Length: 472
Image (cartoon, rainbow, N blue to C red):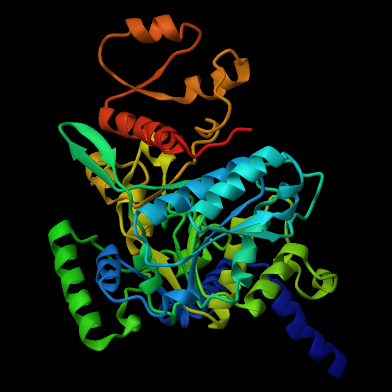
């Protein structure tokens, strides 16, 4: 009797669970519970504390900091690195520019692969004498390479991380040697450039241990790929309103000297949606630290025990210096262990390739508004105004070769990658293009100013090379 009475409710329950309406009800309940307690809480957890540790540094604020005196210049240094002779030559050229641009920072240091001084001795001697002439320090370091069979251009890029180990300096401004310092001006319709420096970057508050631009060209946006939607309506301020905000911000920082007043990301999940490509690292302001260097090396070489205890941070074959540094900073920010500043990419983080892009609004907007724009837009793009703001340009136009690389129009591969990828101003007269490039169709654009500026960067580098370039 007792056994029968216990089995009856079980039969009723099984019958009940077969009802499709019951299953739908359970699914709806579970979905809302999951959405509220998991997704919402994940959103909260992922954003917790980030506003305190990740700050946007507008160009107006950097201009304010730039008016302040340098603190103990002897403990400051500009640093570049080179793993081959071309990049060593480029690094020296950049530092010659800084010397002629009256930098107040005495230490200009190039970290080079120690093997360079042991071959091509004529070129080494010429470059060594040039560096010595301008009081540039050449410091040998060990090449950092994970796979010595890897012949990609980025295989030796981990050598860059030696910059974090330059502990004799309190503050370092680093930039890649395939960059060029510029101070562009328009006069009589022609572009020219004079010598300059970026000493103002040393004056960014030291509480921000890492300062670098956002990789605006890689970051996902809210629509489409972002797993969490921003639930508030947001309107990007126009130039007038934004200018008023910046004026107030500069006044407030001037009165309080509080770097924490700097803007934060509006949609913080945007940072965590881009864990390995949020930051660009072709220009950085850093506080050297042996501890930081050792920790980053762990991300490069992966201790054996990480296979069991830290699998999510194991380096993939496709990850190089940029991905590794992003991964490190992502974890440090989640733990609240460091403060990071975002440089204005329109001044210091510009890629030459931007002037070959079809759409530009991702470049135009401030970093905190990047998730809220449409990728296919040119709203706000003015190439001439953009050029006049740039202080550091990074040559990045793959697959088009760098301007110092072999220029051989007879080489079929070069002709394909270079000429076929160039942009031309649409003039209405195709005769010249058809005669010169009969085997491919040129890419014609209406944005003739961008075409002129892109070509100017390459010509300017060639001008800078005069008397400073040693090819043998």
